[in-house]
Image 1 (cartoon, helix red, strand yellow):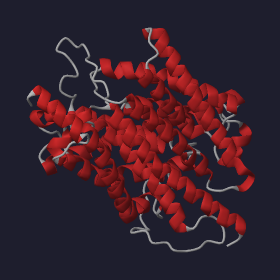
Image 2 (cartoon, one colour):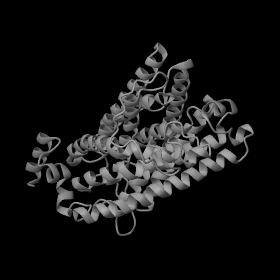
Image 3 (spheres, rainbow, N blue to C red):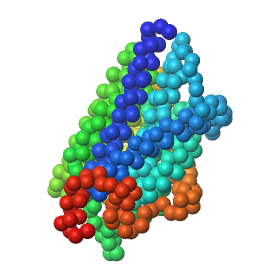
Image 4 (cartoon, one colour):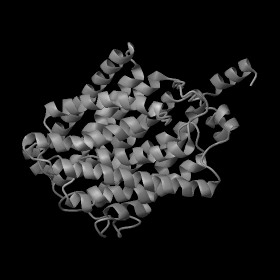
Length: 422
């Protein structure tokens, strides 16, 4: 193995570790965005679902995504065990490790729609089904030489494959689980259920921001020409623009510079640039991030009015911003970068409507498949475990105690119970 190939493998391995570290960001983001009585549950379920995702993806997910098959699904390489040391390209095990981290992120996004009301057993069963049958099929269509890949679909690091797929799983879950107790009034008004720790939420976003360089820049899968630096530049600009745009739109519309909105704006910018980071010029990355930050504010308001309770804002951050990010390459992809990375130039560079049409088709096809498949598999899960949601009493007590028998903050919660007589 020559030095360049060795460096490629080392870079991808480091990037995979960065993506794994994003799970720590999700723990802090989700725990901080929800109530104290559910914090330990959120942290614990993230760890065990990463474990389940890894095992299931090793057994069947990789084969469905990247095995030899047809335009719709892979049908080989189950129970992955490639120990080859390739002379060119990635070693099989390094490639697997990188890809399984993406599958785990998609699952974590989907679980945003479960927050504060789902049984632990619902997480367990759905983790198996989603990682086996939902995420790998979308990955095969776009990254595994499937039918959308053949059409020239551009999704460099997963605005569609990871983020939209996960968000559609979250949408199916929140529809079936219904809103948290006390979220909506009979007159249609909305009660804000504030998260218990904005510092955790902010630190979680920062960890995700750092990990995203493994997500996007790592998807170059090599160090030749240091193109990963260009991808990182676009990623940084979009995230920055998303944070600033969200802060200012919240300030302008509500009179308050809302911190959660700003944090979600940064994430929306990151999600939006994930598809296009290798296809667009830096100025376009800024525009993509700004639009991501603006639409996340309005989509959060929309879902609340529609009585769709999304505690972690997965639908806005990963779903709506994922759609925008996917479509944006159809507008902004430059001829030179499109030729280098596959696909055609965008509309604003004389490419016509062709690439924009492919990007739009992919959103509709992948979004519909991920939602319908997740909805059906959640119905299967519901039948297997006798319901998806904890009882009202368990929800009021909190999932830390009802599902795990202990609090994430034992001293704080026991003191609270003594003072309230609970």
